[in-house]
Structures are given as C-alpha cells and as structure tokens.
Length: 180
Image (cartoon, rainbow, N blue to C red):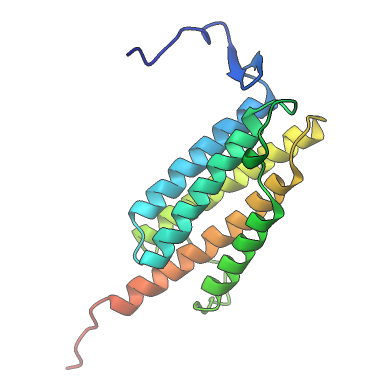
C-alpha cells in the first residue's frame, strides 16, 4: 500500500467535498489542530494520574471531531461530525473539577517544574495557536462552527490546570528528605 498519492505536489489538498490550496486558512487550522492533538498525546504519555490521562484522550477525540467538522464542506457534513455545545460544557466541568484539586501560586507560572507539567504547557501553547488560526478562519469570512472557537479557548484552560495538577501530583509523591 502506497502512503502517498502525489496529488498535493502542486500545492492543493482535499477537503471532503472540495479541493483547495494548502495555503487556505482552513488547511492551516487543520494543521494546527493535528499538531495540538499530537502535543496532547505527548502530555498524555507523561500523565501522572489516570484521571488526567482519561481527560486528555477525551480531548484528543474531540479534536478529531473538530477536524472532521472542518474537513467537510457545509453541504455534505454529517451531523455527527459537528461539535456541539455539550462538549464545551463538558470541558468547563472537567476544568472546574480538576481546578478544585489544585492550589495555584499567586505569581506567574514558569513552565518546566516537571516533565508531565511541561508537556501539558507545550500542548496548551499549541492549542492557543490553533485558537488564533480559528479566529483567522472566522475573520476571513469562511463558515465555521462557533463552538470550535469556544472549545479551543476552554481547552487551553484545561491544559493549564492539567499542568499544575500534574506538578502537584508529582510533588505529593516525591520522596521527602529526612530531617537530621
């Protein structure tokens, strides 16, 4: 089986139902989302709790739904590939629940306290870029499900608290120095 077709060699690619330039804002957003789900996968591979691992895989599934939502043209998109308000609400609930378990420091956070936290922070920055790309698509007048922008905005908040929860979980299990 060949993994390449050569059809994109002239700078075009397929949407589901159309062909477009690879420089199209929709293709740029799809690329950022692909990078975001891979970054979240890296964070998931370093997750220190099952709760965090489960949250991150659920977010990856949602990002695939968003990519499908964007990849179809409006006239042929199946309803099951449209991200709904319920997923934004789920993300808000997950963020609030995890956030209730963490005490945030009163100063700016410097990423890199732990590997698990740092990978979640990197994923957060990639999601923020995807969010900016979604704004570019919307501002260019291309049709886009508004729930996508809301979801990406909330996802970066979840990833911030995932990073802090990861750091707290690792600190709680770190061996303590013995008093002399």
